[in-house]
Amino acid sequence: MLPLPRFDFADPTDLAELVRLAGEPGARLVSGGTDLLPSMKHRLFAPTRLVSTMRVPELRQVEPLPEGGLSLGAAVTLREVAAMPVVQRDYPALAKAARTVATPTIQAMGTIGGNVMLDTRCRYYNQPAGWRVALGGCLKCEGPVCHVAPKGKGCYAAHSADTVPVMMLLDVSVVFATAHGERHVPIRELYGVDGRTWLQVPGGSVLVRLEVPPPGAPIAYRKLRARGAIDYPQLLTAVQHIHDTWRCVVSAVGPAPLRLEATSPPELVEAAMAEVQPLTTHLASPAWRKKLVRVELARAMAELGIG
Amino acid sequence: MPTDRILSFTVNGEPVRLLVEPAQTLLEVLRGPLRLTGTKHGCDVGDCGACTVLVDGAPRLSCITLAVGCEGARVETIEGVATPAGPDPIQAAFDHHVAAQCGYCTPGFVMTLRHLFAENPTANEAELREALGSNLCRCTGYTKILTAAREAQAIYAGKS
Ligand SMILES: Cc1cc2nc3c(=O)[nH]c(=O)nc-3n(C[C@H](O)[C@H](O)[C@H](O)COP(=O)(O)OP(=O)(O)OC[C@H]3O[C@@H](n4cnc5c(N)ncnc54)[C@H](O)[C@@H]3O)c2cc1C
Ligand code: SF4
Ligand code: FES
Ligand code: FES
Image (cartoon, rainbow over all chains, first blue to last red):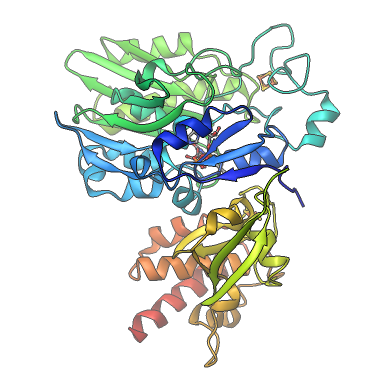
């Protein structure tokens, strides 16, 4: 058995109380727990208190935005997102992406906010404690070297959240609550280049809601994975064509999803091939994943009827 | 020191009150103090679906569900599926088609299918396969499970 390390638990019903508890030393937010609890069982984290978001009404709310678009509470489950008629009608790529996360059961547990805040992943990091200790750990946890890039000082653990590439093309605004009021962060600016410090907001920041602007041009979304269920992505691509611009996001290849733009489909593919550098963070070979960048982008463009 | 909590919820319709530690999972509480060992303990980290139960009608992996988070909830496990009149049609179909070999995955599959047929009784083949993607089986190769699921679905449809 993999017991959880011991911790205290709080499930406030008030947003101000949630923010206060989340700011206390040793506290950690938990929503569906589908990312956090397996990692705690693997001793990647040992918070002294878990603070659940699931009973705070603001985080469970879904409502239209005054200027058009949709506000999605952070603790709305992926299954709820995918099933909403308004999401299916206005943001079908988001519904599709939510339905590719893990399995239907995990989609019924995991939340959209938890997906945005998902930890970066690596084959040397997401392992049981004994496995990691035998290897001497790595830079992201308890060790002196990175096994992916041993000469470097950085961590390249991969952003693996399935819904984020689509939300980047939708220009979603991520709303955090702090003790001093609300802070809006464009989702394209939320992630940074190191797998340890990829979130560009302070620890303990409470994601309250995602503001999705009114729908624009269609988006094609694709997920590459070993099996049709359960598996985290080996490569994520999302593509959109607006007037003279072709935009894409390529993810699961580093700590931040890569956002690229070009003035023609071939240029977009070449830009991606120049930028994307898969590493040994996954079991699948980097060379194969690199080849699949071209293939997946072409398939995504074919789905949009371009390219 | 973490503070224990009194948890009140219902399990298969019976009200239950017991003291739990925040770090206890629903799976540990079901299999431990409640002695409901029908729910299986597989991977323990959310990969396999052997520990699937229903909480307020929705499927949950009990190995990564905190028991303290189930305050006031309605939990259904494999022990609550059969009635005095006999097994549920899903269980009968699994038996009939030998869809269980070692049987370790079976309670999880049955709970997943209970939820699917309650929510979407007319699930088509693609929806059935998508739902079964939540559960792993190392023995059967899934064909017999799919056959049993289709038969159970037909029996459910005939009953309603
Ligand atoms: C077997 C398995 C396969 C999986 N496969 C995939 C996959 O293919 N693709 C994928 O994207 N995900 C996958 N996941 C991960 C996970 O299910 C999803 O990413 C899910 O959306 C996470 O949401 P959650 O509510 O469960 O997050 P939690 O586990 O509750 O939290 C995740 C992180 O976010 C923080 N957090 C949670 N809520 C908030 C908030 N409101 N404000 C600030 N921080 C917060 C937590 O502290 C934690 O660090 C998988 C999980 C499992 C167990
Ligand atoms: S990329 Fe390197 S430092 Fe980061 S998790 Fe993997 S092995 Fe560890
Ligand atoms: S034991 Fe819970 S998913 Fe495997
Ligand atoms: S019957 Fe053995 S794992 Fe499914």
